[in-house]
Length: 131
Image 1 (cartoon, rainbow, N blue to C red):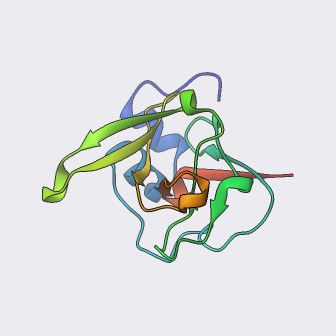
Image 2 (cartoon, rainbow, N blue to C red):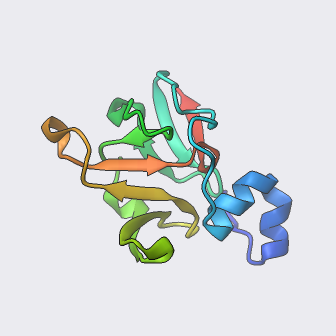
Image 3 (cartoon, one colour):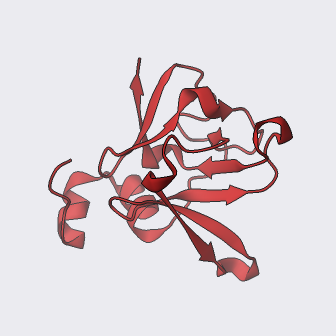
């Protein structure tokens, strides 16, 4: 997407209701309901809001958490990590660095042989470009 929407009304026009709730309002999909939870196809996961490349299928793994999980982003500059103190807990929110869309959270309980990170993301915040 070359021209990002500048208003909430325009974002509502280009995103479906669940995508809007997640990407623009920070909502979370219910566990085990997202399209990419169990996907093993090769490709690049892009932001559903602006199509920025975010994660490679090569770093995706089955965490058992109920959301697509990755060990690291394709380019760290394409994601923004933001402290999140909502719900009475300290977490690190993951946002798209291009459009600011909420993607999910990153945790320190990922595979230790792959860096120990678990980027736990909402399927509807992503578009898989299959290769």
